[in-house]
Length: 126
Image (cartoon, rainbow, N blue to C red):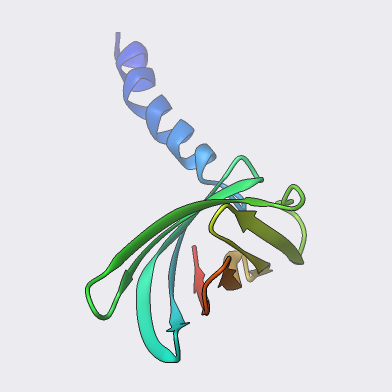
């Protein structure tokens, strides 16, 4: 009975860790955005999933939140020390560079809105 109980308690923890292992997972990020010549800073998260998609959840210093999803131009790899990919969504385009440094994943990204003078950049780690 102890083994069954242990399996019920430990297995979900192991599966949770495996789901966020590697390049997939949640990155805490910060950066700046330029909107019609005005600069705004932001903090938030970038969630990478299935090695191919991501979601920005940002909060700007003026209190405005922004959430949007995007798709990478190619599938990300866990074991690459550095990789740069383009990303796009219906709202804009951008690029992201992922690096693995001392076992820690880091990201640097830029983006530009479609049809509006809005661009930004940021960085963070997981």
